[in-house]
Image 1 (tube, one colour):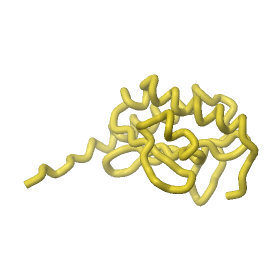
Image 2 (cartoon, rainbow, N blue to C red):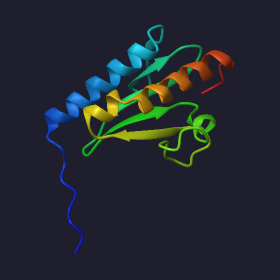
Image 3 (cartoon, rainbow, N blue to C red):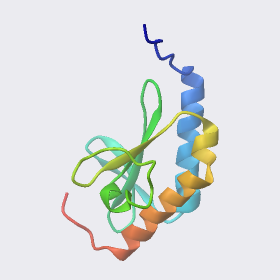
Image 4 (tube, helix red, strand yellow):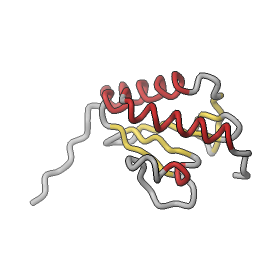
Length: 117
């Protein structure tokens, strides 16, 4: 019988979420926060990413993630545009790989025109 996945303590997921948000702000200090679909997104020319806490992980959604997926294999999803990463520890949220992914998303946002949502 498979082992049940244990949820990290709520306080540790809150730490992961805070660390992920801090990492996004450090990499993209000029990104604004905007409300879209009832959630807070980081935006430059267009939406860039959003950080969401779930039961077992913190998800970071990338608005143009499909364009980043080839160079960033940690991205998950199969949608037309969105891709996401799952962070479970503050070390993952502080990692160079996560910072590089956010940096690539910010760079892509600067290079592309806004598309309609």
